[in-house]
Picture (tube, rainbow, N blue to C red):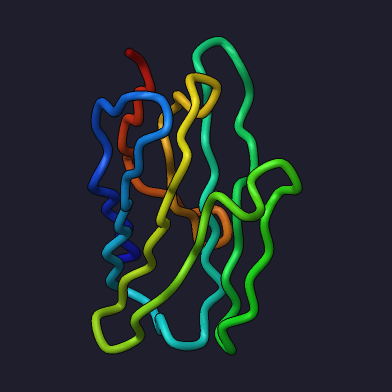
Length: 111
């Protein structure tokens, strides 16, 4: 059974940082492409970042330079380091593998 469990969200002030984790199980992690996506209140799901099995990374243009995706194949875990957070980054963040996704973790950026 495929499982993806996000953690690390919370409330942070503008300009702050958070590190999200996505712990996975039930599939061959080391050969899988993993994505982060987010859904802001009242908006659709937005792709954030992708990491390929070989470590190649992609980011949606507006986030490149502030967000960093990484993976630890020994721990079957993907991370999303988020710096310089702004109120518009407020959303539920999901990790996804194909059609599967976790329950999400809430990130709120507010003073």
